[in-house]
Image (cartoon, rainbow, N blue to C red; front, top):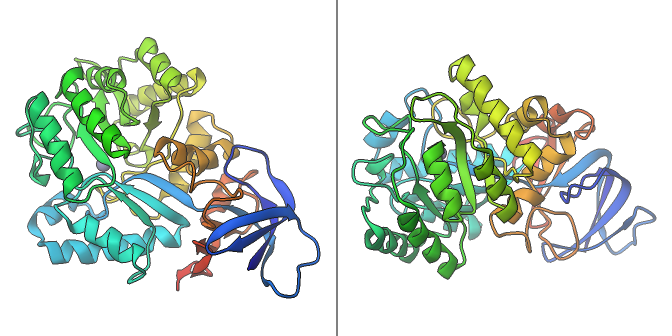
Length: 390
Ligand SMILES: [Zn+2]
């Protein structure tokens, strides 16, 4: 039994900060929470009484095999599987050092990400828990076709989803529009019909795994919402002419059915200022309408590192109008709900995994305090000490 004393506790449910709490941890799980008092002599005390304890962070959108350099795509295409796996080992450590104890990898090559996931789960190397989509489903020549999972009609999409699940995916990703980084694809138009997207969603439901849709344009966002994917990535509401074309009825449907947006605003910082301003305005409307926000960075793409989730959350506070506690919820309890992990991860409540981060300062007052990571526990075990992976 371990007793973790928290000077301040943000439990990931969206509730306000609690003061002076004690968390009891056994077999990697939280088994009790009460007011901090005298710890019993037979329990190991971990004292964070001068710090704030939050749940381990969840980054809902990363690419562990991408380098995060300015040439991420070229490097990815040139490297063999062994090199990609080593990159992933480094990326996993970098994420963990920032307090990220769970990531969802939304696109890599073949089984490399599965091997990385399984090696971390087996305790061979340090890293966050991983949900891995493997290769995303895309049309022939479509966005990220070089990841190797092209499918062109309803039966093809269904078969592609089944193949990826058979090879080990524990989440799915489908490209609902083109993307900026794949030449020859169009982010403004839909790649799939609702029926085709729905085939992938049905396969995800059958396997009880979450499914993400990449969608930059409004047509693809509308289709993905109608197909009831769990999360919509980027969600830039690009109309046919490339300017922002926000559809309130689609956002309202997302809110009603609980389809979350994964904003990935760190990479959007380099978009043209006028476009960025319009996208942010649309996302603020989504927040107002009650669309759930699930935090994600797109780490691994050009110039986005794996320790940038605190920066992403700071943008939610500064520009989307979330309070710091709401932003933390988007990367903890809210993220877990959107990924179907609500029963086990994302909240510091009884019965959930003891994945937690101790930071200096009070992130509920100043979200930037999330960058001051001192100690990280994953499954009740210390995995980061003084900001360094142990
Ligand atoms: Zn991505």
